[in-house]
Image 1 (tube, rainbow, N blue to C red):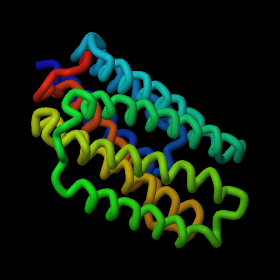
Image 2: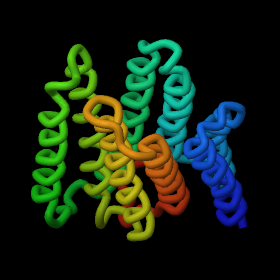
Image 3: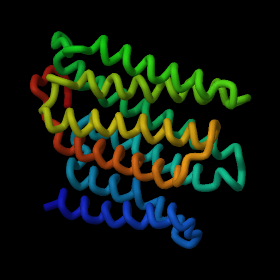
Image 4: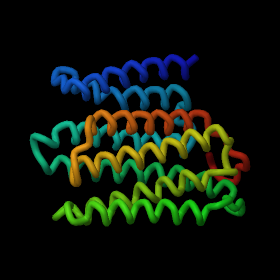
Length: 229
């Protein structure tokens, strides 16, 4: 019941936010603040934050909410983009720390195709960075650091395979992929070349990513418990 209710509420926020992006509706731009807010409430109600995993995802989502606020005002003050980037770096670090708990729950389990996935993500990350590099200017280092952190987050999301129930694994891993897609679109749109309705694409993929992350957290069950959940 909770999942259906919060999914419906989030769907409404999703639709309104996309409408705002498509129409550039200034009066509705603060709807963006509801994205993380709804997910934070859902995560709290759905888990009571009873485990370290839940607490770390919750904390990461708080920093994502801060990042959303900062990026709302990046056009007014360019430094807010950097601050927003930092907030999302902290968000991903907390996500990584949460996913590490799942690895520690069964460290002897070997994730199949792990090295192939690491290689694929590394190639994608480096390829995108080298494509953007000539256009980044003084943003080269911040963008590189962010790209590395979000790639590690996606790798650790994949590393959960076999350590948690398959439903939670799929939701969070797909969420990580949508995060990569959202950040890639944002970077290309901001630094390389404008993408038609780029803002709407960024927000759509971002909202899907965070929704899947939270849903996967709420539905998470460890296969083997060797650490505090």
